[in-house]
Every structure is written in structure tokens, then in C-alpha cells.
Image (cartoon, rainbow, N blue to C red; front, top):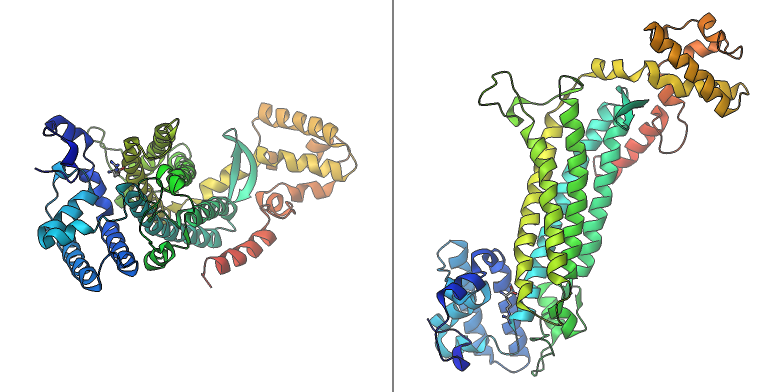
Length: 458
Ligand code: ARG
């Protein structure tokens, strides 16, 4: 088959090279963006007087017809035509003859592909942000229902201090909020138009790029044709935002995997979201969560792939840049799946309050005991030491902190008085965390009200 660029060639392309260089098997993903972009380019050419109104109209009609074919799955994609752009152009030529051959005037695939990718990414960022919003809503609703559920917080995966479960859910709501901000911030830089930059140096025809930007809904026009065609920083930013979100998702997934184990027994996952073992009849495995945790690896990989592709490329366009697409499409697909999966899990978990609470007392109250002594005038380091001895005693006697009598405690320090006995429970411990951002009921009620308003839940 004759290539659009075959003029200076004297032999046919090697079959292997056709296979090796083609991208249409995956860049079909941006076919509809390419159609939109073609239409805007045709209008810009008409406006510049390069095409007549009549020609513009015919080209637009043909592009609409191709769009319909693509949407219906009727379009015949051909690998010999390399990529999505040349497939669509070749079909225009098939339909319109010489007129179809005019569409690529004042344009290069270099500015074309960057434009399509930015259009695609704008749409996908909006969708990602929407899914993040849904996930945050579920977390806020969970928080609202779990203010009075207590569990131990963990540092070093050792029981640390009692917290209210709502506080935990709000921690992840906060992370997904920062992730959302990262995507929205990235969006601002994706929203710049490359088209009209040509292959690298700009275009000879008087194209009104600001008109093209308005047609395609871009906020700005990229003001350097080399940057416009050479860089993929906007994809890197997106891949980074995906990687960070994937990391957050993998951490909450890991917590829930641990919590659903028999050893913790803090939550139950719904059967519909678990799978069984082919050999061990008793198994109910948290595969969705495990895959969410595992897929963070791909999201990191895609970022590293593109960083590596870009490093040291001679300026401006090089075919290496075609390697940006698969990581991009993969991260888009992967992250959307993880966000939906996590939302479903969180909507379906049941919480075993008693199990959680039983872990939230005892030694997790040691810090409260030390702080009690501080209030009675003992310097903190000294108080820490005294309570350390109490802990050793409790462990040795096989008691729980809550079982200690006033006499027991006074044998460690005469600063302990009657009121110390009210101190030894998770609720009191949580509510003494008086600082902004802490786990007290008072603060959580306040922040949940704010979160609900921010999430449009009230
Ligand atoms: N398929 C190519 C890509 O994705 C389109 C741009 C090709 N440009 C070129 N001069 N060969 O990067």
C-alpha cells in the first residue's frame, strides 16, 4: 500500500518495520479526539483562506461520517497506515479524493498527536476527579457513622494510641483530596493548545491558533512550537498524580487486608467482592484489595517508563515519543479500576466494633497515664519512666491497664490520685486530644460537618 510519505522512497517498507513502528493498534484510543481536532483544523484553514467554505463543509461532513463509522465499530483500521492520524486521513482521501489530501495543510502529526493527547487527558482527568470525589464521599459517610467506634492506631504496626475510626477514614479522605488537587493542578497545564505549531518551527499559513483553541475548548495556546511538539511533561505530571493516588489506594488496601484477617478481625468484606481458593475450601480472599495494592506497581512503572523515554531526547520530536501512549492509556484504565474497586469495598465492609474496641484500651493508654502525671507536675521524661514501669508490671502480672487499682498505681508514684481511674478508657483518651486535627469527638464532629459541605453531602 502506498504511504502518504512514500514520495522520496524507492522500495516498499519492510513488513517487520510496519509491524514494529505501527501505533494504530493502541492509538485508536484517541480516534474521536483526532476527528474533533481535524474539524477544528479544517475550520481554521477556512478562516485563514487556505480552504474555501465549500471545501471546508465537505471535509467536515466526511469527518462526521468517519466519526460515525468509528463509533459503530465499522471503521477499517489498517496497520500499514501506521497510526490513527494517517488512518483517518487516508479514509478522507478515499471519500473525497484530492480534497481529502488538503486536510494536512499547515499541520504535522507532531502537533496533531500532542493536541489529541491533551484533549484525551482533559477528559480523563475530569473523569478521574469525578471518581475520586465519589470515593471521598463514601469515606465521609463512613466517618459520620463511626465517630464513636474506637480502635488502636498503629505506628510501626504496634498498637499506639486509641483513635476514633472516623478519624482514620478522614485521613484517607484528606489524601484523596490532595490527590484531587494534584489532578486539577495538572489539568491547568494540560489545557494548552499545541496545534498550529507544525512539525517544529511553526506554520507558513496564517492560522489563527486562538480561534482553534476556542473551537477545541483549550484555555491557552502554547507559545513555543518546539516546546509544543517536543515535550510530554503534561503526561508525566498526570502519571505522577496517578502514581501517588495508587500509593494511597494501596495503603488503605493493605490496612483493610490486614483488618479482614482472622488475626485482626476488625472488618468483614462482603462475599460479592471476594474470591475463593481452588484448593482450600475455607478461604475467602480479599483479591480486589490485593490487586489494588499490586496495581500501584504498574502506575509507578508507567511514570518511570515515560521519564526514561524522555530523558536525553534530542530536541524536538522523535519517534520515541510514540512510547508515551501505552503508559498513559494503561494508567488511565488502571487508576479508574482501582478507584471504582475501592469505593465498592468501602461501601460493602462491615465493621466489628467490639474487636476494634478490645484493642483500643490497655497499653494504648500508657501515654495518657504519663500525661496525667505531667498535669500533676511531674516532668514528662520522668513520667514516661514511671509509666514504663507500670507497663512492665502489667505485662508481668498478665493484667490489663484498666484493671489497676489506685493502690497499684500509687506504688509507682504518689502523684496518682482517685481521678486517675476515670482516665483509663479509649473514649476519654481520644477526647483529651484537644488539638485541631486530633481524634477528639468535638473536633471530629466539626470537621465532618465541614467535609460534608465540601463534598456536597448537605
Ligand atoms: N504515531 C506518532 C506518535 O505517536 C505520531 C507522530 C509521528 N510523527 C512523525 N513525524 N513520524 O508519536
